[in-house]
Image (spheres, rainbow, N blue to C red):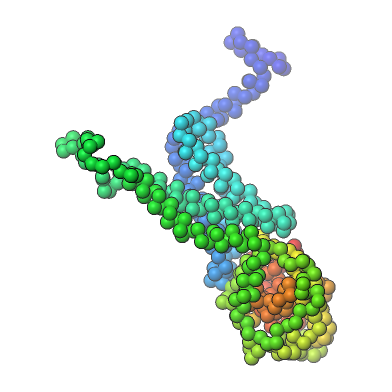
Length: 436
């Protein structure tokens, strides 16, 4: 029969019959529920620890120079473990019905479950968007990065607090090495204490320790979180702060063109994240030079006074980092790369334009066709101000249509070569195809 069938004298709907295998499958999964939930909790804890450790390394710019190629492997580990975090979430949801019944009347434990699930799902979804940054585009990946960061700032302190306060010595007083209750001699039972034996405690030892742990985490993490939150809300003060702490000492300062001050882009929207693979270099008039050489008709070199006297142009473009953040509506002032190449004269055998950073380590390259794009700029000013040292000044390359690892900071040399060149990050796993 299609819709109904008889079984042991009862009328059974076909949907009911088809649901039986699912119920049996769920019953098998939930068998040994307690041990599975404990194991799931432990695995989830290790996943969070690995994600926290690798995520903090990726977040801190200091580790970029120290780890080099190893940082790319850490990034891959972070992605794989992040995707794997879906497994305990799905598994728990299959056990959640029974667990939720056991939590009846335990409101705070229910809240904890909801918070942990929200953190894991939020990290997973925002992480997937960051992983697929090319598919979703810079705006979506930028929002995902903000969510990922926010959940980290909230989630890590919460997880640390939750983990410490759930330690057996704190949660179960009879398992502490130092016991506060008296035990009757010969019986092993806890001795009864008369209510009038001592003054009532303002708070229990357990509550006091939990409060102290929470306060310690807040004091440790709070200032960094507020600094991050301020950067997110201010949307551009990071550049102003970088200008205020500029380590370069170069005179004369470049005078902004009318399109730069006020900036025709209306002012940049967003905050820069300062990444570097070496200590940030600084320059003065004696140490600065800018060179074009290699397969050129005429080698060119400028000191600072000569360089700032070159004719400049103004352009507005967006700035996208491969790690997910973006700064929009930047007003840059500088010299087009293709104009520099015309000045030097490119020899017929040249195929690649290689760029050198003044940090002495970082290099990257563009093909001649890419270098001829109209918006590739050798920039000296941003939003009407000299580019500060923290953001790659006094001179940096700007390639708006590519991710910013192609926009070499502290640019001081351009070389025309006849072969290919694999840049610093491309040697360490980044794609040579850097198109946004």
